[in-house]
Length: 86
Image 1 (cartoon, rainbow, N blue to C red):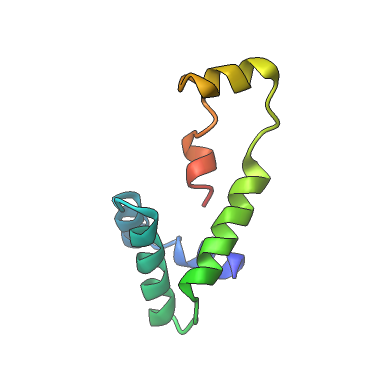
Image 2: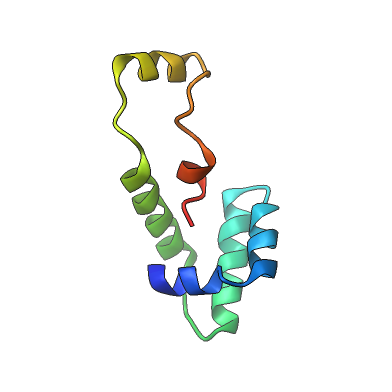
């Protein structure tokens, strides 16, 4: 499924729409709709699981300073690369 999503995201118009998504549900809906148009059958639950898995794989290991900054809301833990790994 990951390779199929990567292939879908080669479409610049779809990438633009996804970047404008207001919520994760909007993002998932756009992705599942685009996948159906290409003949894939992604279920929202499967996309959610995949996104969670990918996000967990890309979260860096934090040291104590990073944890303190994140707790204060000043850390860089949720950078664009973690939020949107595709």
